[in-house]
Image (cartoon, rainbow, N blue to C red; front, side):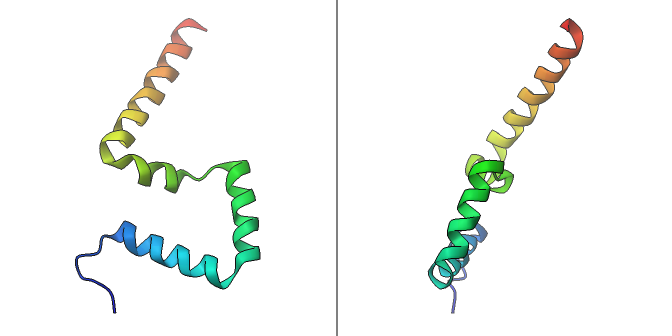
Length: 70
């Protein structure tokens, strides 16, 4: 049924593609909602663990900088 060497990201993408084919109008609505609100899972999934760590460090450093000077 599925390839045992397939990563979880590939499995999620296949499931998402199946859902888009089955329900195109719902997919359009989801697309509009994601464009308005953003989707943290997509952001973190695209960055990987190193990119996510750097993003967290930058956010914390920005918060500390803001609290110290403003």
